[in-house]
Image 1 (cartoon, rainbow, N blue to C red):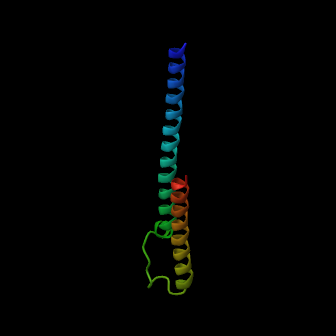
Image 2 (cartoon, one colour):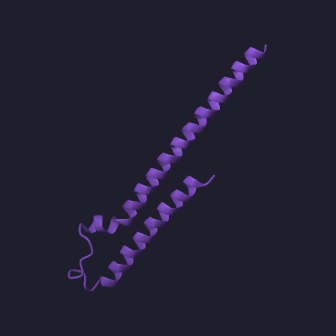
Image 3 (cartoon, rainbow, N blue to C red):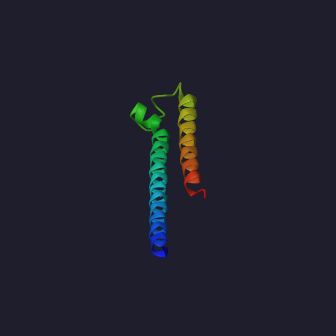
Length: 90
């Protein structure tokens, strides 16, 4: 009787361990996807225009260019911060 209980308890522990490992893998995958998404948001203006910050071409739109690039950089950092906060939350 005790041996059967011990085996079933051991199998339950193995099942719980497997579920926890899968949730850890899902959290890591979620973190990596969020970091990649944040990096894409940060560099989206450069990717869309095809060049880095060029002051000579965009003189009339210099302020708008600066605002868009700065806000996309901050938004990307916020996405990465939120992902790390959620990942390391207990």
